[in-house]
Image 1 (spheres, rainbow, N blue to C red):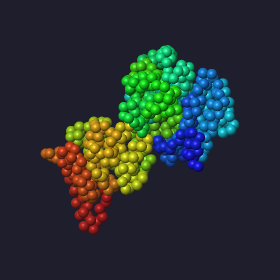
Image 2 (image 1 turned 180 degrees about the vertical axis):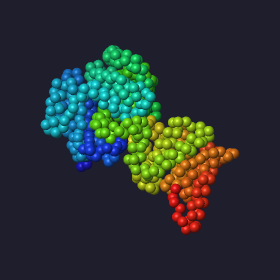
Image 3 (image 1 turned 135 degrees about the horizontal axis):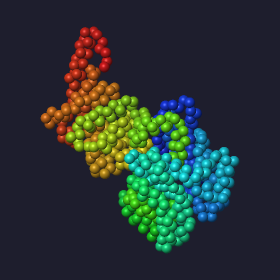
Image 4 (image 1 turned 60 degrees about the vertical axis):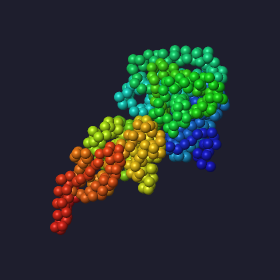
Length: 568
């Protein structure tokens, strides 16, 4: 029986994923582990991620596992882990520890939150983990939990130029962190987790109106100081982590689109949608709620308190929307550990833009064909800038084009044949890219798909998940990317630079090949400019620049005279 089958037999959800990497150089003097694991012993669930440290400072998350144990049910009210809950939690922890060690993870970084922190026999749980499993469990404070949650979120959501407020809803506590860019301005940890609230306020099914009224009044009273602080620091965006907020995001998405997205990362939860969903949840029994699309059935009895809490948070912070973040405490634990490595800190300092950093990490992770990607990106941006009056695109489209150019050949990691299809899949589903909305990722993936092969159409199935405006952008940017890719057809950087001008109704692209033979590039560019002409209705003509033709003639003359011409 495989590890995954054993975990499934124990009721543990378990999946293998690839998330991200880190660049770095100075690691020779560090005794870096090959793999590490992070386990979060929470009040609702016990979660684990396993990260593999790779050469060059990269890491990838290779395993995820989760078990809904419910350590907080009853514990947060009575202050004691029942024998049943204690054993269920320890069994899940033992299974995760075994999985991690079989994966070669060392160290295993385990942290425990509200339930273990508040239970009178929480110390017994920690001691047993040490004596029987050899596992050290750090019982962290609420403020430390908040710091680690923010650490995970800021490496996953683009906080540049923002004053983000990050909300993490657990079973026992709620963490609220106000940031200024990547820096924490203030943070709170409040005993308002959904398991605690459900045990204290909701005893009917469906909840009675007076129960919900008391719950709302309690939440507003306890959250009032945080709301007051936020008015002084004026947050510009709200970010939500944790299972409760992700479930609510999934449910509103399903309510509108009829399906739950593949990934919820960077999806927007809007207040109007939340209010509609909350009203529906509060009218239904647990049995009826279990059939709501997007709801994890194991949260069916907690989601009512979670929905009311989230609605109060929206209203108190005067926010109309919240971005879902799939990174939180566990990723924060990993990042906190790796931050002790100088090479990691150096990478963050050198590339503070998480979007660009994750693109470069993905290109390196999949060995995206050496210098070809950067060369295509340089040529694409030159062509983009020089033809701005034709296409009318702005800075965001320019960035999308550059990122697609850098990643268009990652599919070669799978196979040369149909590698443009492989590129689309890897970009769209590998979960390495961070700081992007789901649609932005799908745009980059679609551009990689159409950098070669059949011309894209608005009706192309590969663009099925995109909005109509995004499809039109992909069509126009693909026209530029296809030409830029053709201008490095040999993958040898023959075309050193290009000069773009206008002659009547034609775009003239001059190729500076520094005296090298660029016939292959000229031929390929002429063939792959068809989409450009179809979209923008302006013919594109390619020529060698005068200096390039002159150097080529000199080189040919040297060759005929018996002298070897020096390569440029």
